[in-house]
Length: 150
Image: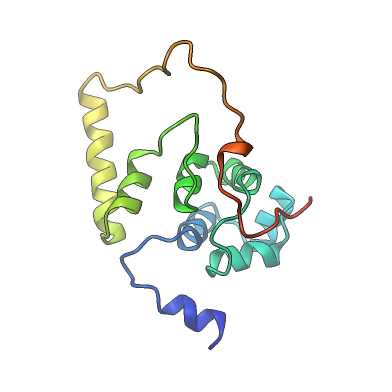
């Protein structure tokens, strides 16, 4: 069975890290090679993440990808199974991980939430006062893949 065959066996309504990254990369109009050039991560590594061969890229790799794609790194951390110590995932990422639903349903919920935020005084809560600063890396479980060196 080829990696492409394995990728096709994912249930269509489940959002995976690879599927999400592919969609966001395509929405940004970038090829794998272009994303690789901007992040310093090899195109073959990015391809294997998109195909689901790597489920837990290093947090630093996810941060670089998020920065280039203009997406919240917390979404990628959540989809990779990490819990960022400094933030909770966005509403959309939480729903995608917590509930099995088609992408269209997730998009509709996101749009409804954005509408509510426009109509009501909704804002993110301030961090807990006097909370000790936490280091990012030590709070994550060991990741199975090595972070590529730029």
